Amino acid sequence: MILLGSSEEKRGKTMNDYEQFIANIKRKTGIDLSQYKEAQMKRRLTSLYEKKGCQSFAEYFHLLNEDMNLLNEFLDRMTINVSEFYRNPGRWKVLEKRILPRLLASNKKLKVWSAGCSTGEEPYTVAMMLSRYIPLTGLSILATDLDENALQKAKRGVYSERSVAEVPTLERQRFFTKEGEFYTVNEKLKRTIIFKKLDLLAEPFDTNVDLIICRNVMIYFTEEAKDTLYQKFNAALKPGGVLFVGSTEQIFNPKQYGFETEDTFFYRKIEQ
Image (cartoon, rainbow, N blue to C red; front, side, top):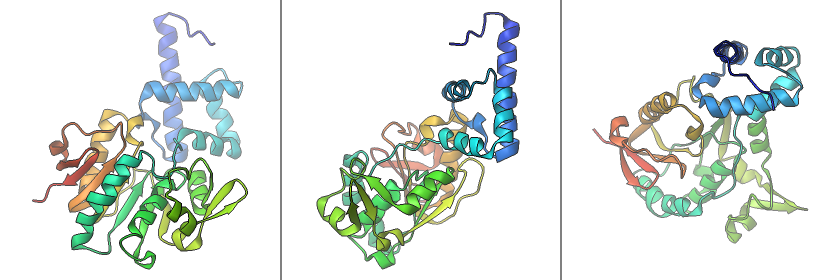
């Protein structure tokens, strides 16, 4: 354990060291780590630089600046890639039985966006679910994430048995090929997804979207960053479109952002 000391001077230096690191990373990569909750981010970063034998954020940035492989490893660790198919299945059942039928009643070519798609389980889940209503050839789902390594894994579509545990048997037989201990998504399902790198906090969004799924992403952001995202998501949706968030991301005042609650963790854009 590194003891930071108790003096105001030492605490000030530590804070300046961290703030300078954040500024350096933003200049080098365009990623603004200050938008993430500081206590969580500092813990993760401190653990990372200690494992590399560094004594400060400045020393760690020097390593990252000199070694592209180390920088890529750092970026991979900064993003949260915990995912599985049909994560929290009860909420997916609501999407299947209540939300999708309403959206499809007025439009059979839905514009769907998986924001913060991680390694792909979420957009593939949506595609399988939509295939119960419309042919695969009629599907086109945008899936974005900040982590290029995660996106590459998503494009490969190879998953462990644990990841596909909640996939219904019929879907598993229809959309996956089992190879040893792993399951590979078939090409027909892969073709329904467009994977793309996107920084939710810094880049513009598409518009006229019917369904945005952004689950277990915003819990890592500051309140100010969340406010910005909710407003951007609302602007991206069609009137009546839906934002589907994670089980720890309930919006307590949805009207503030132009939403109304359609079901738990589902928010409909208010039609003007």
